View 1: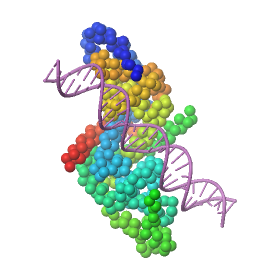
View 2 (view 1 turned 135 degrees about the vertical axis):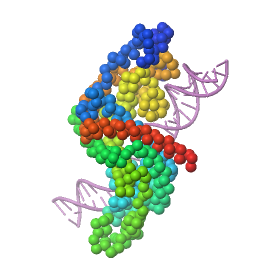
View 3 (view 1 turned 60 degrees about the horizontal axis):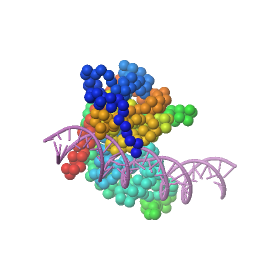
View 4 (view 1 turned 90 degrees about the vertical axis):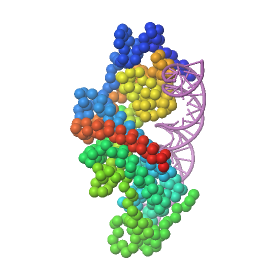
Length: 213
Length: 213
DNA sequence: CTTGAAAAGCTAACTTACTTAGGTAATTCT
DNA sequence: AGAATTACCTAAGTAAGTTAGCTTTTCAAG
């Protein structure tokens, strides 16, 4: 497959015996082509324009935020998968199981209810639930009020598993969010709630822009 | 496949002509088994214990936070995929492309560098980069200082694509984070940065607990 | 009352975004 | 010089979804 060639600038560097490490060169009389290119390269255009999101005209902080969110969510996902593994489930199975348990406090839980709550398709939730049923953690019954509907309930075994997980989960969650003060926590809950809304608006705008164009 | 049966309590309800809707029943003389089960069901155990994360002894707010994060990140992912689609890429391809562009400002970019930055495996980044190379958006060359290493650069075409995307991206990003004041923004950056750290600690703790057990 | 549209759920086939395992070549450590 | 490590690659597999198309049930309108 497409053999990679050493770029000419690198060959030049090697030929002249210089080892140029980015930013650490002294007595550097000339720089490689790629080096020059990189330096003169215009900074990528800003990714936001609202002044509230810029610091000294730079979107650096904004990108830090986005990257941080990305990293944190990666950890969070891993933790979720770990919780799941403790009770022998895949990440999404655990999520659905616990969603059913929590939604049950507000009334009968349907497949579409879970799907909406988790913003996933009904078809997918159907599949996950079927796995949970075959594992004996969830029961399905027809809703007598609307025979199209299925009522999902967590079985005793399902509750046992969640209970078994709880102590570890608490410990880990305490650490995961351990850096938050009570005040920060409250503020964050509020901010995230608003971000959910504005995020949805942004999705709508994007869809509009994509098709309008 | 496993025929779903109407639960006995439901049959009883139907037989007696009563239609019980959760919480909205008047003149209700007896409730179904499932209804009773659900009500007497102990609340799922708390998922956190640190007092800073509890409000009136409940983890409700905490779960709201986690669920909010989940929802927001879903929107965020969708937006990212949308940005990518505008320039004919898959979400992850766009992410890798832009990561290379940004990392390039700090020195030569290697496959493993991108992998670390995005917390993904090197093998995966190799694949994505190969796709980007075949699309003509990224160039690979051997690093003359360490011939095991590959140096990734964004091609002119790659930069064109990113530039083309910028206006739309700005508009959408402005809306996505439009609910933040400058102060909230600064605070959030800080909090997320700390959460990244504590998240990693939590992952480590979880791993320890999982194997120690 | 019936008919037609909409809603709930299901299955099957597919896609995307990854990981693990195992290999080669270059480098570094001893 | 040999051993361990690092960087990258390929191939095969898995997890987490989605879309399309079907059946059954409900609901609304003629």
